[in-house]
Image (cartoon, rainbow, N blue to C red; front, top):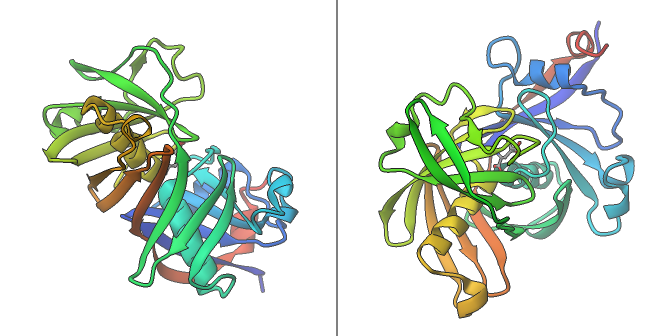
Length: 289
Ligand SMILES: N[C@@H](CCC[C@H](N)C(=O)O)C(=O)O
C-alpha cells in the first residue's frame, strides 16, 4: 500500500490553493510536482500552492523563526516561486487555526516578502498587515491585442502593473500574459491588473497573475490597485494624515483595503477551507526527478 500525504483545498475570494502541511519540510516539491498538483484536470487544481512549514525547518525562513513560527512557502500554479500572496496568507492562517496551531487574534506568518501579521476576525473575515507599497518611477505600457494603456508600477513585495481601462472586457480573454514595455521593466515578470471605477473609493479589477494566468482574485494585486487608485485620486495618507479605504471588487468577491497614514496597508477578506484529503505519495513522487 502506498504512503499517503495530507492535503487541503482552500480559497480566498476564489483565488484557490492546494495546501500541503509539512511542518518539518520533508516533502519534496519541485516545480513539476507543484504544477501537477495545481493542474485542474490531472491534479487537485489551484491557482497556487501553500506549503506549510515551520520557519525553523526552512532555509529561506530560519532567520525569521524568532518572529514567526510558520513559513508560507508559496508557489504559483506553474511551480514558480513568488514573494507574497495576499489571498494565500489569509487561507494559510485559516488552515493554522483549523489545525489548532493558533486561536483567534494576531498571528505572525513568515513569507519571502517578510513577516506579515494576520488577524482572524470573529465574523469569519481575516485581516492582513500587507506592509507598505513601493511605487518605482518609470513609464510602463501594457497591451492586449490592439489596446494599450499606461500602467502604474506598484510593488507589494511582488511586482504589479496597474492599468485603468474603460471596460474590464477590454482586457480580452487574458489567456496570455499581457505584453509590457519597456521589456526591461520587469525582469522577473509581473502581475497585471485592469481597473474600472465603480463609485467613490470603489473599483473593480481583473488580473493576469505571473505564473498562474487569469485568476478570480489577487490580494497583493488588490492592494496595488487601491494604492494606484488613491494616487490617481490625489490621496496619499502619508501626506494628508487621513487613512484611505478602497473597496476592490474582483471576479471572485470583494476585498477591503486601507492605507494608513504611516503607509502600512491592511487588507480584509474571506478565507475558506473547502476540503481535506490524502495524496498518493507514489503519484507525487513520479514528478520528483
Ligand atoms: N494571488 C496572489 C499572488 C500570487 C503571486 C503572484 N502570482 C506572483 O507571481 O507575484 C495574491 O493573492 O496576492
